[in-house]
Image (tube, rainbow, N blue to C red; front, side, top):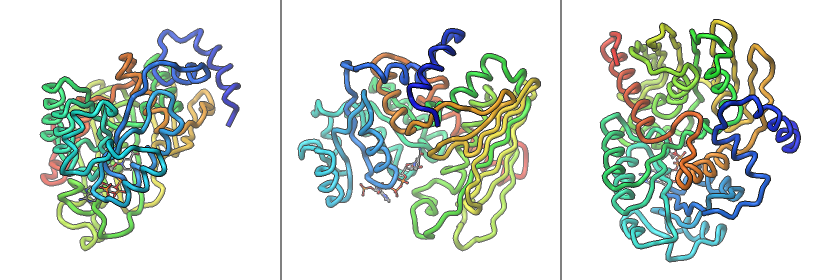
Amino acid sequence: MGSRRDFLEKLTVSTISLPILYGPTQLFAASEEPYDGPILKVAIMGLGSYGRRVAEAMQSCKRAKLTGVISGTPSKIVDWQAKYGIPEKNCYNYDNFDRIKDNPDIDVVYVITPNGLHKDQTIRVAKAGKHVICEKPMGINAKEGQEMVDACKAANVKLLIGYRMHYEPKTVEVIRMRKTGEFGKPKFFQGLSGFTIGDPTQWRLNKELAGGGAMMDIGIYSINGSRYMLGEEPIWVTAQETKTDPVKFKEGVDETIQFQMGFPSGAVASCLSTYAMSHLDRFFLNGEDGYAEMQPSSGYGPIKGRTHKGELTQPHITHQTLQMDGMAQLIFEGVEPIVPLDGEEGVKDMKIIDAIYLAVKTGKRVDL
Ligand code: NDP
């Protein structure tokens, strides 16, 4: 990986020919300069493994700061208070967090709990008048997602989904190339997303808390990826499920699903979502004039990849640091990432997931 300065030098040259500057590019450029603008005050709800990762990453943010926590585990609250200097008045549990309404130290709550809890928690945060960042999948189906969007609109707060890849530099570059026509007309996308899941007692294998199985958790990266890589919304899906371990993967918890999507231009996508293969993380985009391949494509990075023009050389920066600085910039200045990550975007993915589950059940093509 080149130095930050090398990257910024290259950026200065490349931006001359760019018609549009997208969020992360501006963030890299801005990050060398002192920042004295507003700071987004963030409370994390759900102090689990991903919550810890986000909190650590936020230590390097310029525009966002961890100021509060919401947790059902008092001992974690004590640990986080000590680690991040969080005052007692900014600590809540799941019974009393509606009181954030009166707390000026919190602008936004980042919901990082099991999927099945996102909807109610998001709506309660919105009703308390605070912006919401909600982890993917935003809920367990499109109906829930739409309710969340409606509640946030009614409360006049923003709803953003934790699609960190929308700020990831190599991903952003491939999307930029696709937008500027460097691949020609996009024709085909392949997305492979999976890992081998461990502990059979975890919430990810509990239908009520997870809303499904691998598709909800990891397959969603191929769904979201197909949309941002091809730049279109699918109009149909077909899907087939394979289950090798019905004890671990109970009714309604998918182990492996292959799915295909058709797009208005005639482009097609072929994807795999699984909890039964390790290190499956690959995107491939083919256009009439070129291609992009990324592997790994949506893990925590470094993301690696190349296009028909050569290696992707954009730097690795902790995804969640970029995301939280980017979201602060979005909330304060209205600077959008290269592809949106608002609640409506989340609902689009949920509608596709609903259609995939229906296609598995019926064995038929489902139109969107
Ligand atoms: P964990 O199980 O590690 O943490 C979830 C936390 O939620 C728990 O530690 C707990 O925190 C809280 N919680 C509240 N109610 C429950 C309950 N009934 N059962 C279990 N936990 C509960 O999960 P992850 O952090 O891995 O995932 C959380 C969310 O983040 C999911 O929606 C997942 O899809 C998403 N995620 C996103 C990633 C990304 O890259 N964007 C990566 C990983 C996860 P406490 O004790 O503080 O209440």
